[in-house]
Image 1 (tube, helix red, strand yellow):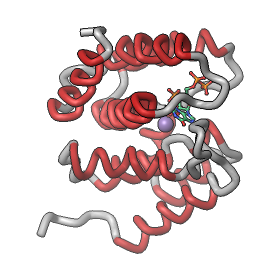
Image 2 (image 1 turned 135 degrees about the vertical axis):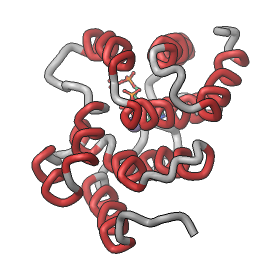
Image 3 (image 1 turned 45 degrees about the vertical axis):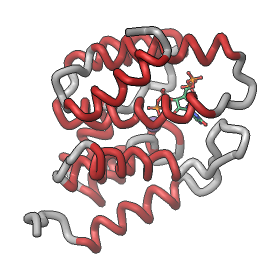
Image 4 (image 1 turned 120 degrees about the vertical axis):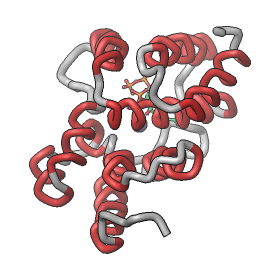
Amino acid sequence: MEVQLISISLFMKCVQFAAHKHRDQRRKDPFETPYINHPVNVATILASEGNVKDEEIIMAALLHDTVEDTATTFEEIEELFGPVVCGIVREVTDDKTLEKQERKRLQIVHAATASHKAKLVKLADKLDNLRDLLVNTPKGWTLERKEEYFVWAKEVVDNLRGTNAVLEGKLDAIFKQKNLL
Ligand SMILES: Nc1nc2c(ncn2[C@@H]2O[C@H](COP(=O)(O)OP(=O)(O)O)[C@@H](OP(=O)(O)OP(=O)(O)O)[C@H]2O)c(=O)[nH]1
Ligand SMILES: [Mn+2]
């Protein structure tokens, strides 16, 4: 068995915390998928496809949208799950007080200098969102807006390269399918 650094108890508290915080949210897809499916997908992509063994990265993936999209604070996350997990979540959290265009621009800029752990979470986050867009159109989105998302996501991913060959390969297969690579 792999060395296990984080107790199963704390890990499950993290799953429970994320599910609780996102309990009233739905994704934008036509099926109104419960929002928690996305953080669970991102964590599962890292563990099962990306071969990531570091439990703190998996926990940060489970929590990655809590501060951005729910009434969760970094202080809560640090108190419950420690400074490393909190630091990763902080790095992948957009400042929602900024204009959307500026937020999107900053994701591209910040990707380049993010820590290795944060880059892994961002790669899996984009992979899950793009896989969804290949099969669904979010409510209220035009096809053009969807195409623009692929173009923008590639700019973010281009600044995350050299982090995880498997995840980057899977993202590149999607970009090739969209004629962006
Ligand atoms: N593909 C997809 N995306 C959905 C769905 N429901 C919610 N989203 C979220 O929508 C965001 C993209 O929509 P935009 O209009 O471009 O961004 P905004 O929500 O921040 O304004 C993605 O965030 P992001 O900033 O790109 O990444 P992150 O917030 O997940 O880090 C994604 O997480 C869905 O059903 N499918
Ligand atoms: Mn996300």
